Length: 467
Figure 1 (cartoon, rainbow, N blue to C red):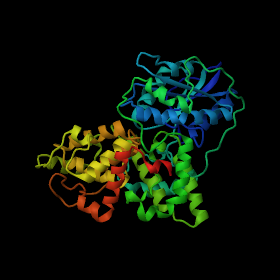
Figure 2 (cartoon, rainbow, N blue to C red):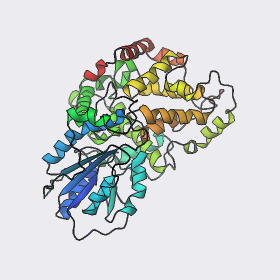
Figure 3 (spheres, rainbow, N blue to C red):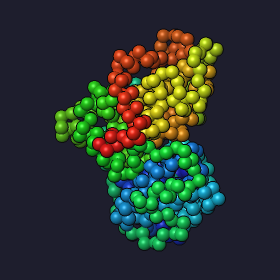
Figure 4 (cartoon, one colour):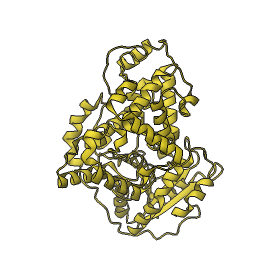
């Protein structure tokens, strides 16, 4: 079987079925999707049409207007692209906890097989551990999140330098477009009664009708969906790739791709981003090595961590030296100490830190370099390392469009020493890397960033969204 594919139960294929079912949990897209194409091939083998099911419930952790709107913004284009291929599409919006929660099982009852996304974190990991035993058909999990299939990296890697040569040895084999399978039989079934039709103009009303946290508002900067992801990719390639290596750690330069929200929700694939970046760089004489290092090596190091960890956001996953040094310095004096509410509301003495947290609150994302600083200061100003970790996970889970993600959890734990090395010992941090405001002031244009976030807060409008 393909290295991307796992069969998670031992159910036989039924003799009679109406369709093959693809459950789009994390890779919510119609293009460059290994799981979708695997399902299409299975449908052709069984001489059946293919049906895609995408759901959005009100019960996932920290369900809010922000996440609901971003996901719903992707639905109309996904539906359009799938239907153009002759693939059926059902979208179910579970608005209230009392509403039906068995739609997947109803659709699976008529399926020859159930295909879904292999994803090592958040609710998909939970679903893939308990749903296979509850369905009567074969249940396949397919990795369409990584360029190099996760399963080919069999042990937990210590750092980027240990995983890099392994990925590079396999990269040529996997850096190729996903083969698109043409369905032999188009899906002609009528939408079931629980199907929710989503149009762009109906999204605000749909979000308002849901039993979710309406206090976390949609991002001022990022709009969901494949079309917006593709537009952002073009903007990055044409306007920022040439500056990426030299300016990526300068937040005010906007030299990064900012594609992590769309990668998280699966509106675009890392493989497609890598291939288009490589092609654009070759055609224009650019070096894309630094960007591909982040997109492939660093991102897939995080997936390796999440897949092989017992709990990817736990202290237990830190290297021994990091756990030991933090434990040794747990009783060190900390001044100031802030509560979770003070962190959440950006009420510290540090203007730069407050601006990074405000960016999280308004945009739903913090620039990667400043997020390192953000995390280090939460450690410095929390009563214990465990409390700091819980605060960082909570804030990302609640506000970040790229949160609840292998990258997020690995990046948070990096602040505590994961995928890093010991440094000079100091109070509070022990031998874990330290970052200072002075270092940020020397290395980045702090005043320009502060002004940008101040204007975003005052006007509620982000010029970056319209670029």
